Image (tube, rainbow over all chains, first blue to last red; front, side, top):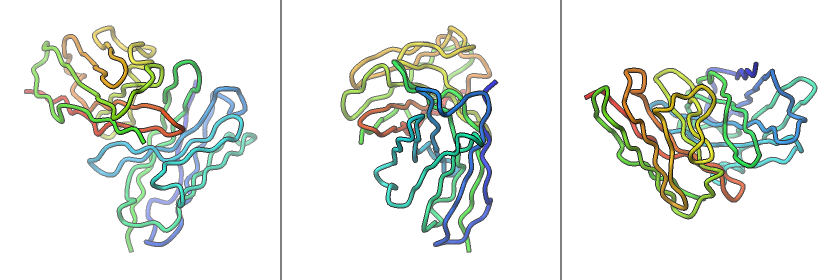
Length: 121
Length: 108
């Protein structure tokens, strides 16, 4: 049974760095084709892809946010960490982590419940 | 970056009616990398369709996907009460993933 769970601060101040952790079970990020991604959703708005890390430790970032994002993994702990620097109120959103299968057909098949991060002083 | 434009923004229909949702890409997308998700209020998105036309595990056959190139469609043949939600298309291309802005299917 695949599960993912996001954890991190609910409130951050402007200019601070956000660190989110995705803890997952039911699969290994060292298995070929396995990836974990971060996606966010501002209140009442659409989904926005942020970053992805794959089984081979290759990392991919949203072009518009790449200077602020870092994704990393700890395979032994089944965790993926996302850091986002210089937080701004417009970064207020629910942040999701999701498993991505990279194969002949690729998709986000399992999602965490999401964690709401509010950026405010 | 490939931009996905979904239409209409909102679809007002009655249970039992057919829903047709469109997703248009700014450049050609491989069908293998086009997926659809359903999201209900307060919930995470749920995978419905992958590879443009394959239903995910447990998805009822009233949901179907079609299309290729730059034009893709999600069809719900007969709306059930639990189908009223927001639907997103998503693609992968050139090492970047993008989502459409969503179509809300609401009860008329």
